[in-house]
Length: 88
Image (cartoon, helix red, strand yellow):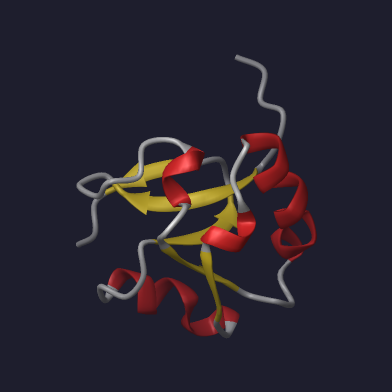
């Protein structure tokens, strides 16, 4: 497998997001100062996602993962492709 990018979105494996288009209508955390933020527009465009339909919520990078794992939001923008995993 040849990976084209190391940027993506982490989502819960028990959730309703299976492909990028499923992000529409969902709350996704991102950190404005993070490198992956520079590529959000191209990510959504390449995936055929209407960015205006995604609730992109800015959050401090130090709180992003803990807030998501605590049950907030539907996913988080993170280095790595669209990943599905359980919340502990």
